[in-house]
Length: 209
Image (tube, rainbow, N blue to C red; front, side, top):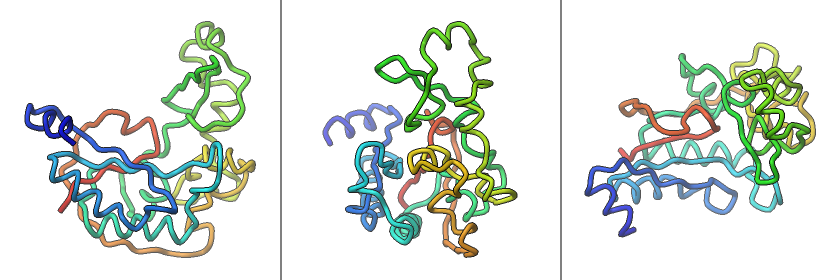
């Protein structure tokens, strides 16, 4: 807390990052208020079950979490595809995974997404292919919408979530459109600004009202 206050007092742009899980999804709005008290934004990432599904959000929990958050905070930006679709954000270009992000795991594997479960690509491939790495099978798969999502406003949702679930052809588990539902969330936009990693991960950034 002292470090965050020192950063904001020195004019250093500061963001508090939280992972929304099934244990804390109702408290994201409170956390946005805490971050605002420090002069910081709040960045919310949705839990991905890369190791255990113990903290995975259910469908209703996911949407309760974001509804609660946006009732207490103004939206700076989001690259969470299903949220952008529900909020009808016109300039949302779709997830960056498979298009403009390259992740290198500690074991040297090259991934189109932090949570991508399998990849045969290595640092050697990245060095040899350069920008052409995005034409490999892993990257093509990450940017290809599920067959079930053809024409869906979520643009295929989060490919990482679908890959972890073991079915890239299934819709995003949090996509309401694939269920035939239409959700409405009241929200208010904050001043938009360029922030680090905004386009390289499925994330949502808010500032308290």
